[in-house]
Length: 423
Image (tube, rainbow, N blue to C red; front, side, top):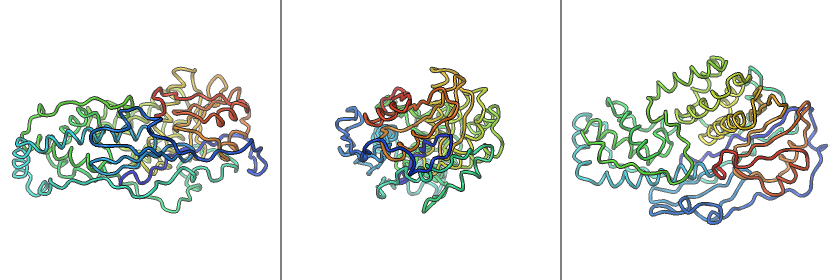
């Protein structure tokens, strides 16, 4: 399964004086990572449907719940509410795509496209399914060395964070979406047809869902090379309030998106090496890349964007990591809009943080469920010299204990800040 690596790039490391881990205060008992009940935490639309069912037990790693989806198109293990919503929407799209693929009109169009393109579509009947590949890694690797001096990444963020990378295996940066659809790419108009289809189904044309990619490519070929009419495709609504695809992705060819994003980053003062590193990281698909850059583009006049981009480009080793950085940027964009202007971003180990002009120190925590653990205890105990306030903005929620402990140390805890109930 393409979601085997669901590590979310989340490490909340604050600036300040170095404090040795054993010298930090310990505040009460730590919480065990809870196992959530999907039936008690999910809306009905995300819990089950005609072609899928979510297992009730959802273990967490102290930050994100892991949901297992059993579907007619394979088993998916996903991290967090956003990826759950994405996969459920894709299952609804697959259901409709399967219906279309069984029609005589589709069969005739595929035969016509086969004559036009030759062997490129000879095996269109192949129907890949997603399969689980074990329990995904958690985010523990991002917390190693949390008690050490939090050195600034600065302008050389790409190099400085490299020293902290000590995973047992570092995956290659090649996504399924890049491998999928080679036949369709060779036909004029196929890419546009694919984006139009994805828009009708409200799915990501660059998704790493192999089954979805196969169906979209087949139908795009039938339309662009076989003459199948787009009118046979009816749009479907979102199954949840989570929409993680920027509309530009549906309407703009990928090369144009890259040029657009590059121009926006350059205007923010992001250096060519940092921009190149971001575009070279295939986990930042055109969709995640565009969402990330769009959020950052709202931070005009804020310094340190270069270091933040370089850090994200280096640290994202899965699509979930890229989503984490995208949502972190969205949190800071929201802060600037709702709470007041930011002055600077700062890359700190595995996370970029922000300094507001008001003097507040802001930690964007794109996690669904923050649990009171040793590392959270340690980071929250470290001082932030000069900060008039310390704030954690969560996309999800904190446990009662985590919230109480953080507040007892003077932290302001904001929950569900993106308004999606735990995206």
